[in-house]
Length: 494
Image: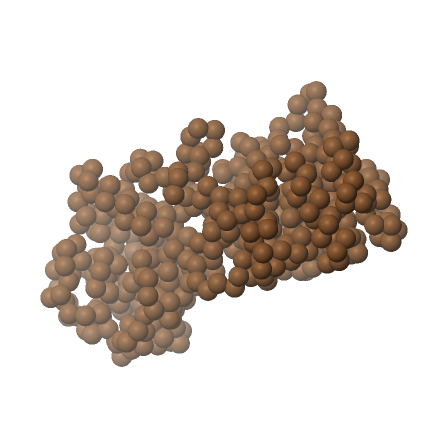
């Protein structure tokens, strides 16, 4: 994968704290730290100490059971067990496999534990007031089974508080998938940087509070890793947002166009959102039967009869359109499909949402080939209809969809993913659950349109819109309706 870059520099150079490291990238970070002269045992000691410190910060002394696996995650657990016992906490250790089979840094960590080591099995949980889950780390790549699975399932059913090391055991750090079984943690201590699985569902709901511990890996190793994934936030895109200029006028701020159809309410929400995020002029093009339903739009938004598809491109050119949105409430008629194709043929940035995506069900290749910036905004059902209902890694499938179409893909959900064809991906974490209501997706499409029309690059426009959408919803509180999201202007981070 090519290193994603913006303006000639790595795209995370201004947002290093937002980086999310895949398992392979975290291995490289460890290896780079060790190559720089930091012993692996020092890293493990620091990791185990961070876990023990977090336990002491959150809980008063109580019987602790530390569940250790056969790898470095288990080594971190042995260090935490030793340090907690040294602080007079009652600690027991249960290990998956034989102690003499441990190798490398994990064997070193186990040698420092002077207590007994029990077999890892459900019975080891007896009497626990707290469990340190150090069985498997973020690199797990197959379903847990046998004694490990039985113990994890017993832990999940026990109600005993859990603190996880790196990730809850059974969780993939790369995809956020649960591989067989996992127990919910009240807190998860990870190291250096978070992993994608800390933000992706269902793992995100299992991690509890995620604490990132500094274990001595220098930040400088990130330059060599060039991470491709980050948590979405202003640090990623603030510098790409439009800055008002004294000589601006409505066209320099962007004339954006929303193509409406049978369900004009969706176009209305998108149009108001585009205006509220700063577009200089917004026009809604609607069929004659929908025009009365758009009469309640703010007077600043132009409503006009939708031209015939054959004349659409010329209309956009004459009106100096800067970006176009098709899909919300457009319908699935032959004329709607012709409007979608006319939008795709226009040489200007486009957002394709809702019906504009369903029109390409089973035909992802039909969405490819646009030279102008394109943003696709599918929810889970639309994504499956267009790109197939593949099982497994949602992050990887979103990247693959972006690569296949050449578009920026916004895979919507509580953990919305924004990915581009160069391999960049931003995972959003600020969306409250009450965004799950009708019309909020139309608002998001309008926000992206408004930013595109002002000249914001497609990836940054999509990522910024997703974050602003979540932030506004969080401000408004639960039980909001989509109209609540657009009743005031969106404040762009300075």
